[in-house]
Length: 402
Image (cartoon, rainbow, N blue to C red; front, side, top):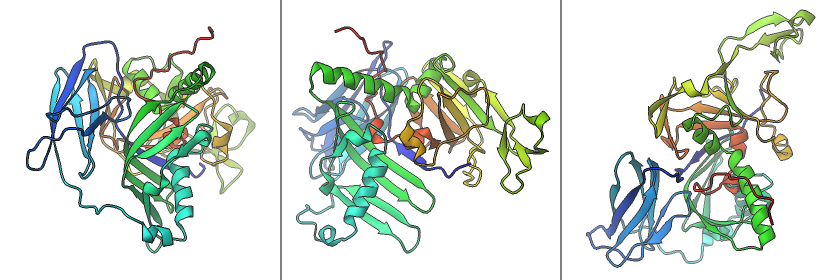
């Protein structure tokens, strides 16, 4: 198995569907209970954003059952982030903002003297935006909002913080994305990148031709996403939509490399080229893998195992999607996965999801709870912020009509 780059993407998904809907209502105040008008409130990874009224109140309506992350931000205060699960009734929130202890930023002298800042910024952009075709058409408009810390003495970690929303112009998908960064940690020793934050989207204006191109690109981005898979699992349509799930079992059998064994699929044994490992791979029933709690939630129950970096295929689930092909740029990373199953077509995208919790819940919006429920490897680990679509986008086919 090749060296894989693992990714933890921490943000809550939101989407809408025609069914029973509810509301999230709330009030924003300071630590003394004084209501705060004009605070920015948004639902993570959506286009739903508003400001609190003169009484410090806000309200989001027409929400389907699911888990939502509500973010409140106001200059001079620390952001308030709350996760809300709606099942059969509306929710009420109280957000009490704490005054920011960070001094107002003047001239960043330490950043200006950091001769490595350009290198750190390049690493951040590469891992934050990604290396896809869409990433090539993205631009971080306010890189000065970032501060970096690199620990080379102990663990080779690059961390980043931001004192404001990061503003990303995505000319591939037609969005301006504003991202409240809460975590960025690049572990260069173990090839693990953790990205945490709360984004929201604004539509870009464009010509009719640009709008059509954006719709095509958005559809491809959505179909290739993990959210597409989890929504299909909830709708019991994963197989029909081109998904299959495999699991590699422990203790592969060692057999002689002979012509009569060519009907099997193997991993080559690097220690002895004349022998190969018969890999015990089984295809799983996707609909049975997740247990339905009710019509709006399902739970994956598994044994959470530490990730074995020498054998990353063990303990995880291979998710194969045959609706889109893997990008040629992806192969340049060396992180592509060769799953030894002959029945898989050449047109496919292969990812691995490692459960990090014994129970992981998904909802009809494609949301995963806890947010750190899975560690990704393979194709989904390669996709980053540049390939996000708002979660009220459902991947509708693009009409050819003019």
